[in-house]
Image 1: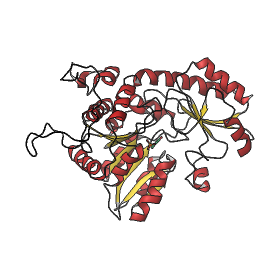
Image 2 (image 1 turned 90 degrees about the vertical axis):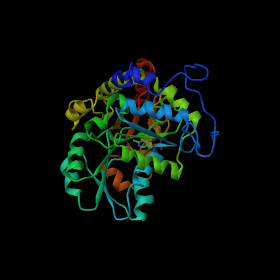
Image 3 (image 1 turned 180 degrees about the horizontal axis):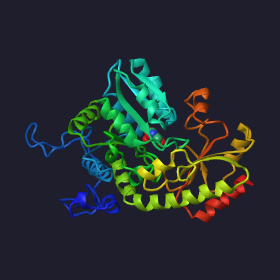
Image 4 (image 1 turned 120 degrees about the horizontal axis):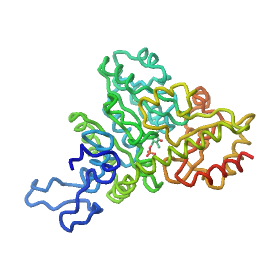
Length: 384
Ligand SMILES: *Cc1c(COP(=O)(O)O)cnc(C)c1O
């Protein structure tokens, strides 16, 4: 069967992967090598040096590209490494429009690393596309969108962003980490580049740090691959293999993440101590209709605040779970709880993050794939 005709769950298991030609091994081997023997100078089997290419990584890149419905995939040593490559497409004087609720590390890289190089970032509320249109000027080169956003689960209309990008000759890159390719495929909505922190749902088992970019355009692929090979944020073959293995169950895990996520969101909604809940599946979520249009389901990421909470009471709550673990990161099989203001978003100034709703009483859940009864029981005892 041709890969492009496969359904998602079949691609997750087979795309990019072929039995090993020397032994027939069904699993792609871990090609733990830094270099490849050449027949005569320059005459090789397509592999010269492993910073540029490694067969285990190539299998993963092809698999991730297939899952996003894209032509090319490039893996990086972390999500930040992959974002860094996108920003390196720009030059001093160029401007970027991005959201006011972003992964903390993205905000830190934009403001602390790239602003000093003369790249300007505009942080706007992207829920209303009008705010993005208004921020475009003659220096704008890139729209960087994250949706759902971290941690307040804003939903940004990818098709509307693409319209603005195309009308103004800009690149549109979408951080698709929270949705995973199972829930949302930005290239099909007009994005030029999809970015993943592979560390999260794609890896899925909290044992790898990795990033990826997926794109259709050959020239863009060439430029980004040139940056990978020149700057060297390439992942190793062992990590590539772990993700190849993790991705095989992406569709199964995501089904359960979504099921458990819905149950947890509904439970929180009925709890008398819970104040605000951020989850795009609620019909009163401001962009619920767009979420419904561009996502297959609503995922397992939920943030909430409790009534009359102080920093102290929030810390106490965050430390009182028995099944949810207090930790950074998300998207693994195990449920995690996070305090964005002091953990994932600590690098964003207090006034900036509070504007986006990242207040001291906000907690973020990455709902895992454990038995839902145990997760609800844990929430009950912690909130008691
Ligand atoms: C974790 C994360 C990143 C950064 O990825 P790393 O793999 O940790 O470098 C970027 N964006 C989002 C939305 C994330 O959750």
